[in-house]
Amino acid sequence: MLSERMLTAVVRQCTKNYLKLQPTDDVRVPAPKPGQKYMLYMHVPFCERLCPYCSFNRFPFAEERAVPYFASMRKEMMMLKDLGYDFESLYVGGGTPTIMIDELCDTIDLAKETFSIKEVSSETNPNHLIPSYLDKLQGRVQRLSVGVQSFDDGLLKQMDRYDKYGSGAEILERIGEASPYFTSLNVDMIFNFPAQTEDILINDIERVVESGTSQTTFYPLMASPSVARQLARTVGRVDYTRERTYYRIIDELLAGGADPLFDHGSAWTFNKRGTDASPTCHPERSAQRGVEGSPAASADEPAAPRAMIDEYVVDYEEYPAIGSGGITYLGENLYVNTFSVNDYNAAIAQGRMSLMGKTTFSKHDRMRYRFMMQLFGLRLDKRQFEQDFGCTVEAGLPVEMAFMKASGAFERDTRDELTLTPKGRYLMVVMMRQFFIGVNNLRDQARAALVGEERELIFG
Image 1 (tube, one colour):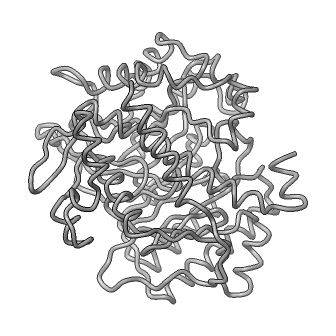
Image 2: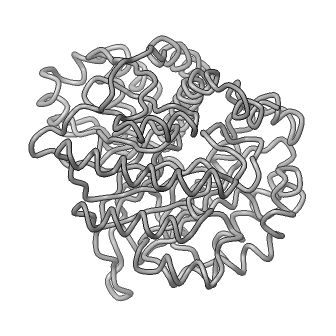
Protein backbone atom coordinates (compact mmCIF):
# COMPACT_ATOMS: atom_id res chain seq x y z
CA MET A 1 0.00 0.00 0.00
CA LEU A 2 1.12 3.58 -0.67
CA SER A 3 1.32 4.61 3.01
CA GLU A 4 3.57 1.61 3.73
CA ARG A 5 5.96 2.44 0.89
CA MET A 6 6.11 6.10 1.92
CA LEU A 7 6.75 5.20 5.55
CA THR A 8 9.47 2.73 4.60
CA ALA A 9 11.29 5.37 2.54
CA VAL A 10 10.98 8.10 5.19
CA VAL A 11 12.12 5.97 8.14
CA ARG A 12 14.99 4.56 6.08
CA GLN A 13 16.23 8.08 5.32
CA CYS A 14 15.73 9.29 8.90
CA THR A 15 17.68 6.43 10.43
CA LYS A 16 20.42 6.90 7.84
CA ASN A 17 20.74 10.53 8.89
CA TYR A 18 20.82 10.18 12.68
CA LEU A 19 22.23 6.67 13.24
CA LYS A 20 25.76 7.55 12.18
CA LEU A 21 28.47 6.35 14.52
CA GLN A 22 31.07 8.95 15.50
CA PRO A 23 34.30 8.12 17.39
CA THR A 24 34.34 8.96 21.09
CA ASP A 25 37.03 9.38 23.73
CA ASP A 26 34.55 8.82 26.56
CA VAL A 27 35.72 6.15 29.01
CA ARG A 28 32.47 5.94 30.99
CA VAL A 29 28.79 6.33 30.28
CA PRO A 30 27.15 9.32 32.02
CA ALA A 31 26.07 9.01 35.65
CA PRO A 32 22.39 8.26 36.37
CA LYS A 33 19.79 10.98 36.74
CA PRO A 34 18.51 11.21 40.33
CA GLY A 35 15.21 9.40 40.78
CA GLN A 36 15.14 7.81 37.32
CA LYS A 37 14.56 4.07 36.95
CA TYR A 38 16.89 2.07 34.74
CA MET A 39 17.16 -1.36 33.25
CA LEU A 40 20.53 -3.09 32.74
CA TYR A 41 21.27 -4.94 29.53
CA MET A 42 24.07 -7.53 29.22
CA HIS A 43 25.26 -8.89 25.89
CA VAL A 44 26.75 -12.39 25.54
CA PRO A 45 28.16 -12.57 21.99
CA PHE A 46 28.77 -16.32 21.64
CA CYS A 47 26.88 -18.92 19.61
CA GLU A 48 27.44 -22.56 18.75
CA ARG A 49 26.71 -21.63 15.13
CA LEU A 50 25.99 -18.30 13.46
CA CYS A 51 22.48 -17.97 11.98
CA PRO A 52 22.29 -16.30 8.53
CA TYR A 53 19.60 -13.75 9.48
CA CYS A 54 21.25 -12.45 12.67
CA SER A 55 23.11 -9.11 12.62
CA PHE A 56 23.87 -8.87 16.36
CA ASN A 57 27.40 -8.98 17.64
CA ARG A 58 28.22 -12.68 17.90
CA PHE A 59 31.20 -15.00 17.54
CA PRO A 60 31.59 -18.77 17.33
CA PHE A 61 31.78 -20.12 20.89
CA ALA A 62 35.15 -20.98 22.41
CA GLU A 63 35.48 -21.58 26.15
CA GLU A 64 38.86 -19.84 26.35
CA ARG A 65 37.25 -16.71 24.92
CA ALA A 66 34.01 -16.86 26.88
CA VAL A 67 35.29 -17.44 30.44
CA PRO A 68 37.36 -14.21 30.69
CA TYR A 69 34.54 -12.37 28.93
CA PHE A 70 32.01 -13.19 31.66
CA ALA A 71 34.57 -12.07 34.25
CA SER A 72 34.93 -8.76 32.41
CA MET A 73 31.16 -8.23 32.39
CA ARG A 74 31.05 -8.72 36.15
CA LYS A 75 33.76 -6.07 36.53
CA GLU A 76 31.87 -3.69 34.23
CA MET A 77 28.75 -4.12 36.37
CA MET A 78 30.70 -2.82 39.34
CA MET A 79 31.78 0.23 37.30
CA LEU A 80 28.10 1.10 36.90
CA LYS A 81 27.57 0.68 40.63
CA ASP A 82 30.50 3.06 41.27
CA LEU A 83 28.80 5.60 38.98
CA GLY A 84 25.72 5.44 41.20
CA TYR A 85 23.44 3.21 39.13
CA ASP A 86 20.81 0.89 40.54
CA PHE A 87 18.60 -1.39 38.47
CA GLU A 88 15.16 -2.91 38.89
CA SER A 89 15.40 -5.13 35.84
CA LEU A 90 18.08 -7.14 34.05
CA TYR A 91 17.92 -8.44 30.49
CA VAL A 92 20.57 -10.81 29.13
CA GLY A 93 20.70 -11.08 25.34
CA GLY A 94 23.02 -12.39 22.69
CA GLY A 95 24.31 -14.38 21.02
CA THR A 96 23.32 -17.19 23.32
CA PRO A 97 23.36 -16.09 26.98
CA THR A 98 23.06 -19.69 28.24
CA ILE A 99 26.12 -20.83 26.29
CA MET A 100 27.98 -21.24 29.63
CA ILE A 101 25.22 -21.78 32.15
CA ASP A 102 27.38 -21.61 35.29
CA GLU A 103 29.06 -18.39 34.19
CA LEU A 104 25.65 -16.89 33.41
CA CYS A 105 24.28 -17.91 36.83
CA ASP A 106 27.30 -16.43 38.62
CA THR A 107 26.79 -13.16 36.73
CA ILE A 108 23.07 -13.02 37.50
CA ASP A 109 23.75 -13.76 41.18
CA LEU A 110 26.24 -10.90 41.40
CA ALA A 111 23.78 -8.54 39.72
CA LYS A 112 21.08 -9.45 42.24
CA GLU A 113 23.50 -8.99 45.15
CA THR A 114 24.65 -5.61 43.83
CA PHE A 115 21.44 -4.00 42.57
CA SER A 116 17.71 -3.89 43.45
CA ILE A 117 16.78 -6.28 40.64
CA LYS A 118 13.23 -7.59 40.86
CA GLU A 119 13.11 -9.50 37.59
CA VAL A 120 15.57 -11.13 35.20
CA SER A 121 14.89 -11.88 31.54
CA SER A 122 17.16 -13.94 29.32
CA GLU A 123 17.31 -15.41 25.85
CA THR A 124 18.19 -19.00 25.07
CA ASN A 125 18.09 -21.59 22.29
CA PRO A 126 15.95 -24.75 22.10
CA ASN A 127 18.84 -27.14 22.79
CA HIS A 128 19.30 -25.54 26.22
CA LEU A 129 15.76 -26.38 27.33
CA ILE A 130 17.02 -29.41 29.26
CA PRO A 131 16.66 -30.23 32.98
CA SER A 132 20.28 -29.49 33.93
CA TYR A 133 19.95 -25.95 32.53
CA LEU A 134 16.35 -25.34 33.55
CA ASP A 135 17.02 -26.28 37.17
CA LYS A 136 19.76 -23.63 37.35
CA LEU A 137 17.68 -20.96 35.64
CA GLN A 138 14.61 -21.54 37.80
CA GLY A 139 14.36 -18.78 40.40
CA ARG A 140 17.18 -16.82 38.77
CA VAL A 141 15.34 -16.01 35.53
CA GLN A 142 11.65 -15.12 35.58
CA ARG A 143 11.21 -14.52 31.84
CA LEU A 144 12.85 -16.73 29.26
CA SER A 145 12.73 -16.06 25.52
CA VAL A 146 13.43 -19.04 23.23
CA GLY A 147 14.54 -18.50 19.65
CA VAL A 148 12.47 -20.99 17.65
CA GLN A 149 11.89 -19.00 14.39
CA SER A 150 9.82 -21.82 12.83
CA PHE A 151 8.60 -25.33 13.59
CA ASP A 152 8.83 -26.27 9.92
CA ASP A 153 11.66 -28.76 9.36
CA GLY A 154 12.34 -27.50 5.85
CA LEU A 155 12.81 -23.91 7.05
CA LEU A 156 14.91 -25.09 10.01
CA LYS A 157 17.23 -26.89 7.60
CA GLN A 158 17.50 -23.77 5.41
CA MET A 159 18.49 -21.76 8.50
CA ASP A 160 21.04 -24.41 9.54
CA ARG A 161 19.08 -24.93 12.76
CA TYR A 162 17.73 -28.47 12.26
CA ASP A 163 20.97 -30.31 13.09
CA LYS A 164 21.83 -27.76 15.78
CA TYR A 165 18.54 -27.61 17.71
CA GLY A 166 16.45 -30.56 16.52
CA SER A 167 13.26 -30.98 14.55
CA GLY A 168 10.16 -28.88 15.01
CA ALA A 169 8.51 -31.73 16.91
CA GLU A 170 11.47 -32.05 19.29
CA ILE A 171 11.54 -28.30 19.93
CA LEU A 172 7.79 -28.29 20.57
CA GLU A 173 8.19 -31.00 23.21
CA ARG A 174 11.02 -29.14 24.96
CA ILE A 175 8.99 -25.93 25.18
CA GLY A 176 6.14 -27.75 26.87
CA GLU A 177 8.55 -29.24 29.43
CA ALA A 178 10.29 -25.89 30.09
CA SER A 179 7.26 -23.64 30.47
CA PRO A 180 6.48 -24.45 34.15
CA TYR A 181 9.95 -23.30 35.22
CA PHE A 182 9.29 -19.62 34.46
CA THR A 183 6.81 -16.82 35.11
CA SER A 184 6.76 -16.25 31.35
CA LEU A 185 8.16 -18.32 28.51
CA ASN A 186 8.23 -16.46 25.20
CA VAL A 187 8.65 -18.19 21.84
CA ASP A 188 10.36 -16.02 19.21
CA MET A 189 9.18 -16.67 15.66
CA ILE A 190 10.02 -15.19 12.25
CA PHE A 191 7.54 -14.73 9.41
CA ASN A 192 7.88 -13.96 5.69
CA PHE A 193 10.70 -16.38 4.90
CA PRO A 194 10.93 -16.64 1.09
CA ALA A 195 10.12 -20.38 1.23
CA GLN A 196 7.35 -19.93 3.80
CA THR A 197 3.87 -20.46 2.40
CA GLU A 198 0.70 -19.32 4.10
CA ASP A 199 0.04 -22.94 5.09
CA ILE A 200 3.48 -23.19 6.72
CA LEU A 201 2.82 -19.97 8.62
CA ILE A 202 -0.59 -21.18 9.80
CA ASN A 203 0.99 -24.47 10.91
CA ASP A 204 3.64 -22.51 12.87
CA ILE A 205 0.89 -20.54 14.61
CA GLU A 206 -0.93 -23.76 15.47
CA ARG A 207 2.27 -25.25 16.93
CA VAL A 208 2.80 -22.12 19.05
CA VAL A 209 -0.68 -22.51 20.53
CA GLU A 210 -0.12 -26.24 21.03
CA SER A 211 3.16 -25.60 22.86
CA GLY A 212 1.39 -24.08 25.85
CA THR A 213 3.72 -21.08 25.95
CA SER A 214 2.36 -17.97 27.67
CA GLN A 215 3.67 -15.57 25.03
CA THR A 216 4.86 -15.51 21.45
CA THR A 217 6.61 -12.89 19.37
CA PHE A 218 6.56 -12.83 15.58
CA TYR A 219 9.24 -10.78 13.79
CA PRO A 220 9.21 -10.04 10.06
CA LEU A 221 12.35 -11.23 8.32
CA MET A 222 14.65 -8.22 7.88
CA ALA A 223 17.33 -8.14 5.21
CA SER A 224 19.68 -5.47 6.50
CA PRO A 225 22.82 -5.02 4.38
CA SER A 226 25.02 -7.09 6.71
CA VAL A 227 22.88 -10.21 6.29
CA ALA A 228 21.13 -9.71 2.92
CA ARG A 229 23.75 -11.63 0.90
CA GLN A 230 23.90 -14.53 3.34
CA LEU A 231 20.11 -14.64 3.51
CA ALA A 232 19.86 -14.77 -0.28
CA ARG A 233 22.32 -17.71 -0.34
CA THR A 234 20.53 -19.70 2.38
CA VAL A 235 16.81 -18.90 2.54
CA GLY A 236 16.34 -16.70 -0.55
CA ARG A 237 15.64 -13.05 -1.23
CA VAL A 238 13.15 -11.34 1.05
CA ASP A 239 9.86 -10.29 -0.57
CA TYR A 240 8.37 -7.44 1.48
CA THR A 241 5.22 -7.35 -0.67
CA ARG A 242 3.93 -10.43 1.19
CA GLU A 243 4.68 -9.07 4.66
CA ARG A 244 1.33 -7.38 5.24
CA THR A 245 -0.64 -10.48 4.20
CA TYR A 246 1.36 -12.66 6.57
CA TYR A 247 1.02 -10.13 9.36
CA ARG A 248 -2.77 -10.15 8.93
CA ILE A 249 -2.83 -13.95 9.21
CA ILE A 250 -0.90 -13.80 12.48
CA ASP A 251 -2.97 -10.95 13.85
CA GLU A 252 -6.27 -12.62 13.01
CA LEU A 253 -5.41 -16.11 14.26
CA LEU A 254 -3.70 -15.06 17.49
CA ALA A 255 -5.57 -11.90 18.43
CA GLY A 256 -8.57 -11.46 16.14
CA GLY A 257 -12.20 -12.35 16.50
CA ALA A 258 -14.41 -12.60 19.56
CA ASP A 259 -12.32 -15.27 21.30
CA PRO A 260 -8.64 -14.82 20.34
CA LEU A 261 -6.13 -17.49 21.25
CA PHE A 262 -3.77 -14.85 22.60
CA ASP A 263 -4.29 -11.27 23.79
CA HIS A 264 -2.88 -8.68 21.45
CA GLY A 265 0.11 -6.97 22.93
CA SER A 266 2.36 -4.91 20.72
CA ALA A 267 2.46 -5.04 16.97
CA TRP A 268 4.27 -8.37 17.13
CA THR A 269 3.79 -9.77 20.63
CA PHE A 270 0.86 -11.83 21.85
CA ASN A 271 0.13 -12.95 25.41
CA LYS A 272 -1.96 -15.97 26.42
CA ARG A 273 -5.17 -14.79 28.04
CA GLY A 274 -5.51 -15.30 31.76
CA THR A 275 -1.81 -15.69 32.43
CA ASP A 276 0.32 -12.57 32.55
CA ALA A 277 -0.66 -9.05 31.59
CA SER A 278 2.61 -7.33 32.34
CA PRO A 279 4.81 -5.77 29.67
CA THR A 280 7.69 -7.97 28.66
CA CYS A 281 10.72 -7.05 26.75
CA HIS A 282 13.94 -7.95 25.14
CA PRO A 283 16.42 -5.34 24.31
CA GLU A 284 19.42 -5.32 22.10
CA ARG A 285 17.27 -6.80 19.43
CA SER A 286 18.33 -3.44 18.12
CA ALA A 287 18.53 -1.39 21.24
CA GLN A 288 17.14 -2.52 24.53
CA ARG A 289 13.70 -3.12 25.88
CA GLY A 290 12.29 -2.68 29.35
CA VAL A 291 10.70 -5.19 31.68
CA GLU A 292 8.22 -4.35 34.38
CA GLY A 293 6.53 -7.12 36.32
CA SER A 294 2.97 -7.39 37.55
CA PRO A 295 1.27 -10.26 39.36
CA ALA A 296 0.01 -13.04 37.14
CA ALA A 297 -3.74 -13.18 36.86
CA SER A 298 -5.51 -16.06 38.52
CA ALA A 299 -7.51 -18.51 36.48
CA ASP A 300 -10.80 -17.15 37.81
CA GLU A 301 -9.80 -13.54 37.29
CA PRO A 302 -8.31 -13.16 33.81
CA ALA A 303 -5.93 -10.31 33.23
CA ALA A 304 -7.19 -7.35 31.27
CA PRO A 305 -5.29 -7.00 28.00
CA ARG A 306 -2.45 -4.54 28.31
CA ALA A 307 0.16 -3.43 25.83
CA MET A 308 3.27 -5.55 25.91
CA ILE A 309 6.55 -4.63 24.38
CA ASP A 310 8.83 -7.16 22.84
CA GLU A 311 11.36 -4.85 21.29
CA TYR A 312 12.89 -1.71 22.57
CA VAL A 313 12.09 0.38 25.56
CA VAL A 314 8.89 1.80 26.91
CA ASP A 315 9.00 1.39 30.68
CA TYR A 316 12.74 2.10 30.73
CA GLU A 317 13.42 4.56 27.94
CA GLU A 318 17.07 4.98 28.96
CA TYR A 319 19.41 2.13 29.74
CA PRO A 320 23.12 1.35 30.01
CA ALA A 321 24.40 -1.77 28.26
CA ILE A 322 27.45 -3.82 29.20
CA GLY A 323 29.39 -6.30 27.12
CA SER A 324 30.94 -6.30 23.66
CA GLY A 325 28.45 -4.94 21.13
CA GLY A 326 26.10 -3.51 23.77
CA ILE A 327 24.18 -0.36 22.81
CA THR A 328 23.47 2.23 25.51
CA TYR A 329 20.86 5.01 25.30
CA LEU A 330 21.23 7.76 27.90
CA GLY A 331 20.10 11.38 27.58
CA GLU A 332 20.67 12.57 24.03
CA ASN A 333 23.39 10.05 23.25
CA LEU A 334 23.45 6.51 21.97
CA TYR A 335 26.75 4.74 22.78
CA VAL A 336 28.10 1.59 21.11
CA ASN A 337 30.57 -0.71 22.82
CA THR A 338 33.41 -2.21 20.80
CA PHE A 339 32.49 -5.31 18.84
CA SER A 340 35.90 -6.81 19.56
CA VAL A 341 35.91 -9.20 22.52
CA ASN A 342 39.68 -8.76 22.79
CA ASP A 343 39.42 -4.98 22.94
CA TYR A 344 36.49 -5.23 25.35
CA ASN A 345 38.46 -7.37 27.81
CA ALA A 346 41.47 -5.04 27.50
CA ALA A 347 39.37 -1.94 28.22
CA ILE A 348 37.76 -3.46 31.31
CA ALA A 349 41.15 -4.64 32.59
CA GLN A 350 42.33 -1.02 32.33
CA GLY A 351 39.38 0.18 34.41
CA ARG A 352 37.44 1.85 31.60
CA MET A 353 34.38 0.98 29.58
CA SER A 354 34.72 -0.11 25.98
CA LEU A 355 32.86 2.75 24.26
CA MET A 356 34.05 2.97 20.67
CA GLY A 357 31.50 5.39 19.24
CA LYS A 358 28.33 7.34 19.83
CA THR A 359 25.64 9.23 18.00
CA THR A 360 23.85 12.28 19.38
CA PHE A 361 20.13 12.80 18.86
CA SER A 362 18.59 16.21 18.33
CA LYS A 363 15.43 17.13 20.24
CA HIS A 364 13.41 16.31 17.12
CA ASP A 365 15.11 12.90 16.87
CA ARG A 366 14.28 12.19 20.51
CA MET A 367 10.65 13.18 19.97
CA ARG A 368 10.47 10.81 17.00
CA TYR A 369 12.03 8.06 19.10
CA ARG A 370 9.45 8.56 21.86
CA PHE A 371 6.63 8.64 19.29
CA MET A 372 7.79 5.37 17.76
CA MET A 373 8.54 3.51 21.00
CA GLN A 374 5.31 4.39 22.78
CA LEU A 375 3.11 3.70 19.77
CA PHE A 376 4.92 0.38 19.38
CA GLY A 377 3.44 -0.25 22.82
CA LEU A 378 0.04 0.76 21.38
CA ARG A 379 -0.36 3.98 23.41
CA LEU A 380 1.38 7.34 23.39
CA ASP A 381 0.94 9.44 26.55
CA LYS A 382 0.40 12.94 25.12
CA ARG A 383 0.56 14.72 28.49
CA GLN A 384 3.87 13.07 29.38
CA PHE A 385 5.20 13.95 25.91
CA GLU A 386 4.35 17.62 26.46
CA GLN A 387 5.85 17.60 29.94
CA ASP A 388 9.14 16.07 28.75
CA PHE A 389 9.60 18.05 25.53
CA GLY A 390 7.85 21.35 26.29
CA CYS A 391 5.46 21.11 23.34
CA THR A 392 2.51 19.02 22.24
CA VAL A 393 3.07 16.05 19.96
CA GLU A 394 1.09 17.92 17.28
CA ALA A 395 3.45 20.92 17.51
CA GLY A 396 6.62 18.85 17.82
CA LEU A 397 5.86 16.31 15.09
CA PRO A 398 3.36 17.93 12.70
CA VAL A 399 4.38 15.94 9.62
CA GLU A 400 4.37 12.60 11.44
CA MET A 401 0.97 13.29 13.01
CA ALA A 402 -0.53 14.40 9.69
CA PHE A 403 0.73 11.28 7.92
CA MET A 404 -0.59 8.90 10.57
CA LYS A 405 -3.98 10.63 10.70
CA ALA A 406 -4.32 10.59 6.92
CA SER A 407 -3.42 6.89 6.92
CA GLY A 408 -6.17 6.06 9.41
CA ALA A 409 -3.64 4.89 12.01
CA PHE A 410 -5.24 6.33 15.15
CA GLU A 411 -8.13 4.70 16.95
CA ARG A 412 -8.13 7.29 19.75
CA ASP A 413 -6.70 10.80 19.49
CA THR A 414 -7.61 12.72 22.64
CA ARG A 415 -5.88 15.32 24.82
CA ASP A 416 -4.43 12.44 26.85
CA GLU A 417 -3.44 9.71 24.43
CA LEU A 418 -2.98 8.21 21.00
CA THR A 419 -3.91 4.59 20.33
CA LEU A 420 -3.80 2.56 17.11
CA THR A 421 -6.20 0.93 14.67
CA PRO A 422 -5.29 -2.45 13.12
CA LYS A 423 -3.85 -0.54 10.15
CA GLY A 424 -1.88 1.64 12.54
CA ARG A 425 -0.44 -1.45 14.22
CA TYR A 426 0.84 -2.71 10.89
CA LEU A 427 2.35 0.68 10.06
CA MET A 428 4.25 0.37 13.34
CA VAL A 429 5.58 -2.99 12.16
CA VAL A 430 6.84 -1.26 9.02
CA MET A 431 8.32 1.61 11.01
CA MET A 432 10.06 -0.63 13.52
CA ARG A 433 11.34 -2.96 10.79
CA GLN A 434 13.07 -0.06 9.08
CA PHE A 435 14.34 1.27 12.39
CA PHE A 436 15.77 -2.16 13.25
CA ILE A 437 17.52 -2.20 9.88
CA GLY A 438 18.92 1.25 10.64
CA VAL A 439 20.31 0.07 13.97
CA ASN A 440 21.73 -3.01 12.21
CA ASN A 441 23.53 -0.60 9.89
CA LEU A 442 24.93 1.10 12.99
CA ARG A 443 26.19 -2.29 14.13
CA ASP A 444 27.80 -2.81 10.75
CA GLN A 445 29.76 0.41 11.25
CA ALA A 446 31.08 -0.95 14.55
CA ARG A 447 31.72 -4.44 13.13
CA ALA A 448 33.79 -2.97 10.30
CA ALA A 449 36.49 -2.03 12.84
CA LEU A 450 37.26 -5.70 13.62
CA VAL A 451 40.75 -6.85 12.66
CA GLY A 452 42.84 -10.01 12.65
CA GLU A 453 41.39 -13.29 13.92
CA GLU A 454 38.11 -11.72 15.01
CA ARG A 455 37.51 -10.28 11.55
CA GLU A 456 38.29 -13.66 10.02
CA LEU A 457 35.79 -15.37 12.35
CA ILE A 458 32.98 -13.05 11.22
CA PHE A 459 33.79 -12.25 7.60
CA GLY A 460 35.77 -15.36 6.62
